[in-house]
Amino acid sequence: MKYRFIALACASLAISASAFAQNSDVVRIGVSNDRSGIYSDLGGLGSEIAARMAVEDFGGSVLGKKIEVIGGDTQNKVDIASTMVRNWFDTENMVAIVDGGASSTGLAAMHIAKEKNKTALISGGFAGDFSGKQCTDISTQWAPDTYALANAVVQNTIQAGGKKWFAITTDYVFGKTMEETAAKFIKKGGGEFLGSVRHPLGTSDFASYLLQAQSSGADIVALASAGGDLITLIKQAQDFGITAGNQKLVTFLVFINDVMGMGLNYAQGLTFPTVFYWDANDDTRAWTKRWQKTTGFERAPSMVQALSYVSTLHYLEAVKAAGTFDGQAVNKKLRAMPVQSKLIQNARVRPEDGRVIMDVYKVQVKKPAESKSPNDVYKILDIVPGDELFVPLASSECPLVKNN
Image (tube, rainbow, N blue to C red):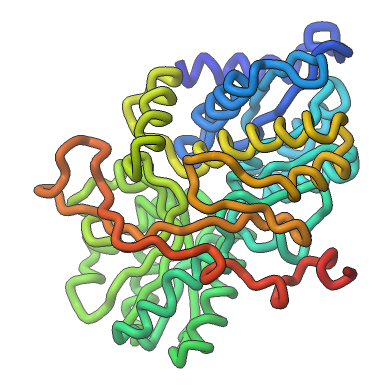
């Protein structure tokens, strides 16, 4: 099903405007993300189907227009993402972009949406730039950002004795921002950041990177990578014996897909933040069962996929309330309205910078013997209020905040 959809999605981009011509009775929401690479399971088709579920729950139309959801593969390349998203806005009567995929491709999509005065709902981009240095008045960042992720991890690790840090970092905007932000928290907490080594997306052999981490003298080896890279990195780190000595692995951004991909034997004991877990409560369990039935996937949805649902539904409510698809008008309403979804806890959109604040779960991966089913992988250790983790407004780097 997945590969058939990808082929159809790619083919749709080549079809002339006569096939998907702008229709005054139809508006479209585009889900832009990785469909064929290391992040495909984190967003991909599952994120698009989540957006479709939101449209269905909203009623299928808004302001007298039918709502359709389309999707496409960025291949984690900025030029491909830019061309695809621009084409959607120009020829498909698209009013909003959802997910965005990797931070680099998501930022490209967001700026095109700004140019067109439409809306960007960033559920797949975790770099702090979305609601920080590159914030816009037509975008909101639903994915927890690098500030919140670093804040959730560093302080507790230093308090537990992890003073000296070395990072293995993916070499693009998310990894660089994650490393930079974590280093600031490490120094602020009285720790020492010894340095880092960076790897390209899709790395298969981390031996040289792990050797540098092992010889760094660090107590903590921090992994500022995600998706397939993180799976490979953790498995090779343990096979390499890096955790058998005095060093400890620390991760900032882990998805349930990653845990399933590496298996509990490798993932057990990892502790990290997340804003969604399928087994958190009755509402998350019911939504997950419906998502699985709709997608045909047996695995549990990722937080990106859940956030794609939440953000799409909230956007449609804002369009209805604003009475227009105008990006600036819709986003003023979107930021003023309460977030009603039960999939995330105590969520609100900060009007000044579009940062979505929500509670964060601190979870730990179960041991194989503790897991009762294939998707039963986390223990919820704590729930941290969003105001304690996300960047305070006074520290925001968003130009819109500074100009207020």
